[in-house]
Length: 335
Image 1 (tube, rainbow, N blue to C red):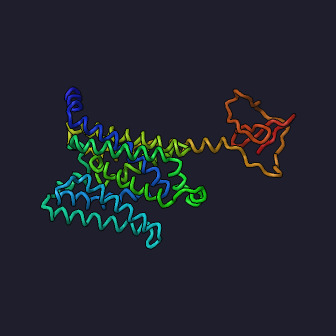
Image 2 (cartoon, rainbow, N blue to C red):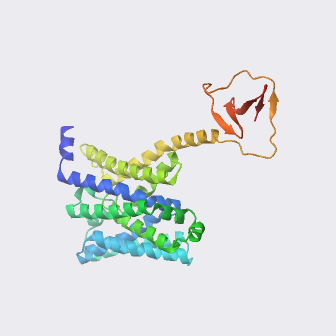
Image 3 (tube, rainbow, N blue to C red):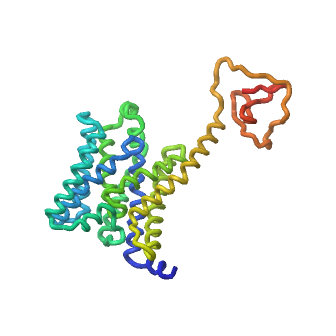
């Protein structure tokens, strides 16, 4: 344990923890809007086209992070324009980014004389080798993403949920759709040193899916997804560091698997919560409601009886023995 604590005190681990925190906040923040728009795989498409950006950086000697940002933003804008104008559906546009981006990146990396191991640092992440400069860039870009996603949450949610309503409300649909696409591109490049370009979509989607299991409102989902993303990023990093004393465990896959484990735990909890909420929902009000009348009931309901109370019009129903009933005068009505 002392060796593990000494490892956490080293400079490269502290830089990795900082990068994990900011990545865990930014990726699910954008992913919440992508999931709401049913574009959960958009992060994968942008991640593949960002490979070309990384390769251009290796070829030209520029920073791979900034070239990846530029190429990813261009790719995200192109896919949004194609999707909006209807020349091809979203799935076809994503497929074009998948294959063209990845193939172009591998080809350009070879032209740059770089080995596959160099490119693999960006494909599957290499957070423990992140430099001070890269940490600064990651923190700056992630902060911009989080501020925009939280600050413009009402507008972005309206556009993601119902574009017709948002248009009637006077929102610029195209501008906000492009904004989400650009934020997704930036988030992908922010996370490429943490979980890698091929796994970044998992960090954008899985915490959101987990939060949806236990939350009821959009704001709660957004906040919970960001918290879960941070927990998975930092927890996966620390877990991989501890496991490295016994085996070679990469942080990126560990982060993703930890996020998936969180979803597996939350899924049955979500099923239970939804069933509880259904029990507490009143019956719909109808013009003529038929009740079965009984003369007596073997149990007197009250505040401390332990049965679920459900408001129903001008009275309260109690859930008991698989049905609902309420005292009416000297008899009980059963539903």
